Image (cartoon, rainbow, N blue to C red; front, side):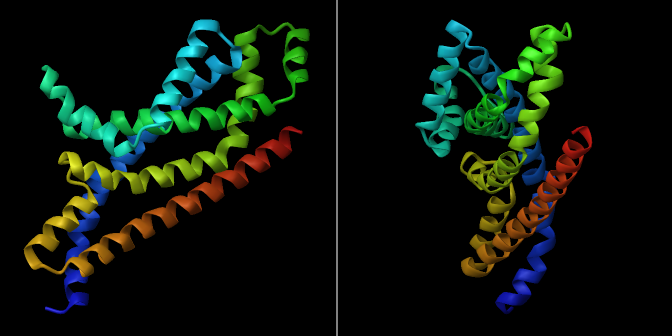
Length: 222
């Protein structure tokens, strides 16, 4: 069997692994990371004394250590102290915590870019701090952060390949299994690379569409 025939015959199984494992892993991790990022950014923006220091500590530790090491510590390290973990949910948690640290800095920067006069205007019309953040500041910050957040989810999609190191059978793990049976490593790795490229291209298109809609929405509000 030629390499091209092997690639074509393997695409269905690789796509199945992508749809059943890679995309759900990406979506769940990104959703949780966004929640972590928003909370962490808001804590820093509000300058809550103790919580702000804890947030900075979290960001410092996570951004200073590799994702691969974090996966290994969670999946292989925790069982050694009696804590059993599921491979898929370990990957979701670790990837969310990891990307959440980077996204938190993005959102924090976007929050601080909102003019302080917006806060004062909110107080003038009788809104409290929570209402001002929810209805005025946070929507503007998220709209500004959309391009960076789009890059984050594309990056997370590609990083799911690291989950294969903790036995999660996503696309890269599926390609390694086929390559191990056929010894056509170049063909299989090119095949999975093409699928990652396809998924990334779709996400890029979605990102641009969301950006245009956000720009339109922002223009209408003005």
